[in-house]
Length: 477
Image (cartoon, rainbow, N blue to C red):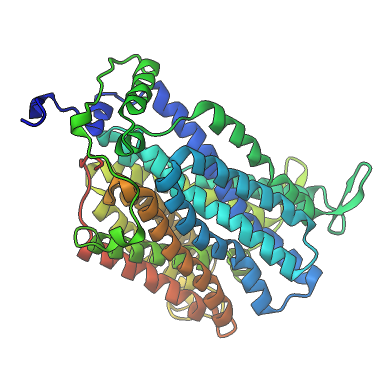
């Protein structure tokens, strides 16, 4: 007994949140957080379509093109680290709305870039918002979910990413192909405007989501309780219970260990350092492999000699857009399978196996490229290439879902945003290096360029298997 309150009388935030089954509130929250996530995916992938145009328009060298393609990823390093800490210091909701506004604003302003330097700066600043949104979004959603559904819903959150990819494909096709004549689009009053400028201008519309965040979202009960605002935490829990038509149970002050946000050094104290190192390594591996493959994917598919235009409903669609659409669509079953497995067999085996299989199938499609005879003539060509590419996309995006479910559970509330941000920032270092390395090695050959990416996936999976701890069924702490 302490302060007249027995252990049985103490009610923690996790206990109360676990008593509220998934319902109307959680589905509405997933829709809002998922929308921000989809727009993140749209903003990141747009550069894949505009980069070939900008190389021609601005006369970029291979190095300059690689740097421009990686600019937003560089910004995401700073965004992950800075905004993750900000969310722990000043609140999840505040950080969430500012990160969405940041990436929307600078994505739109990229339409006014005049060359490499302005384009690089604006893409970098876009990335600062993107990285922050990824770190904050997962922290915010995870702190509203019951333990038995948290992993699945965090994977569902990441499943919004390919929706953003599909939106990017549609917008790119619209402004760079369907409406474009000689690279420009006729706009009333403005006249002929370069299609890539309109594409970036359209990328500013996610700023409207800020109004939804401000009006519909509130601070998380975990954060409020840890900062000592027990009344605010109970008000928040009551609102969630009421929306789901469930009974409200208040937390008690005695159950809460009040703490201010911690510094980065907390991540490397004895109880967290192994988890911090393990998950940061996994983040590096998945970013190094994914971005190394996908930033250069239009050029890779083109080099494979399988791009053809297709006539659909009377309109001619360039093959590259169809490839990206198919690649995005196959990601959905990748996510859903991971969502099932993280709650069935656990976070650790799901992430480890999906990373390893991502590497295996990346190697398969790399070894099926033209002028690569590693598997012999019988295993090269369209179907090994296309099948390997789809399988790699399936497992890689499933791994993304698993890592987003896993990471927030490894860190306590006072450094959950900081831990998410740190791991994501280390990952984005890999995201910068991967495309640059692949771009440098592609002159030797596509197998040489893609093999390091495949190896990184496999090594990341092995690290998770060797050093990860299972968090399935554990309450947030």
